[in-house]
Amino acid sequence: MKAGIVSYGTYVPRYRITPREIGQVWGTDGDAMGQGLNVFRKSVPSPDEDTITISTEALRTALVRGAIDPQQIGAIYVGSESHPYAVKPTATVVAQAVGATPNLTAADFEFACKAGTAAIQTCLGLVGAEMIRYGVAIGTDTSQGAPGDALEYSASAGGAAFVLGRERVICRVERTLSYTTDTPDFWRREGQKYPSHGGRFTGEPAYFRHVTECAHRIMEASGTSPKDYAHVVFHQPNGKFPQRVGKQLGFGDAQMRYGLVTPYIGNTYSGAALIGLANVLDRARPGERILMVGYGSGAGSDAFDLETTDEIERYDRSFGRPVQWYLDHGVELSYAVYAKFRGKIHMGGE
Image 1: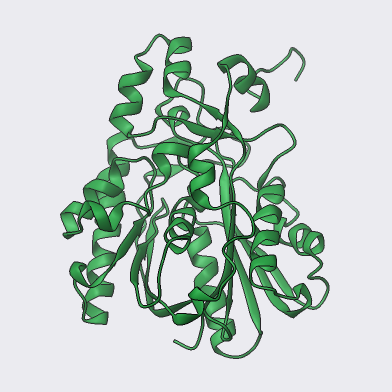
Image 2: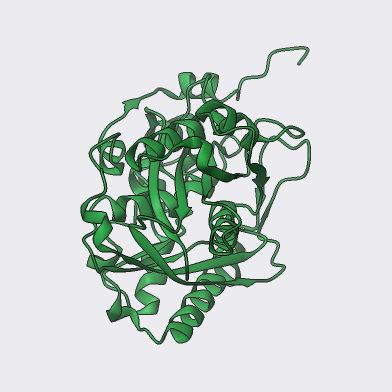
């Protein structure tokens, strides 16, 4: 392809809560729940953080790292299922905040957890067609599960921003393709505060079918096999699913190691696979091939065959916090403060 990743940045809120703390409130074994999901703590946004602030922080890091003039950005797309407004775009606020307005196109994307990867595909098309110089794709969420629901143990907050371009490409996109069906495994109607899900149905035939089919198809189209990739990144609704699907496809633990971030920060939904990719790029050397397969309930998968270039050696990865910092750090909250932060307490008359 004629385009690739020029720069990237991430942001994860500082607060954390553990499955044990959640389980104590609902009379369940939180440690067992965490071990079953392979999630040992999750990020929690503070009351003044949302997908706009997360996107802005991640993009500012990307722009400084890549020495990119915001006025050269021709498109900003923000993928999320927890936009602050039902009617008013997140993308325009982010564009204004980083100084990219007014000569660009902007829009919000929605496709459950793969809205961010769909935004990357769109930017690749615009950049590759030379309609714009740089395109920005952001995957971010602050989703939450209903009190006591299994989702409450994993649904978290965070995001990653990727700048796509044709110049100074640090990671070339060799190929991308998608696999999409109408599989109703997860949904939230307008006005509903919390999403609903199909329980075990969210695994098979939803997640596993789409991810494996999409992975098989891109490797077939690229003439590759699992041994050709130094790293692999899957969407991670929990820490268990990506490990299982990776082994089913023939990938080893070393290939999956850095792409798996959910055990330490929870499921950041639209940001999950992208934060995993950022963690890989934080460590990558030139000439390393990467397979990324996202997933969004509803349902669909986007796959990317990527390869790092010599440019990554000159890329300034020292600015901003690496993903590992977010995995290692955090301030733990009690359930009471967590419930206050996330608006789970409703007063009379509301």
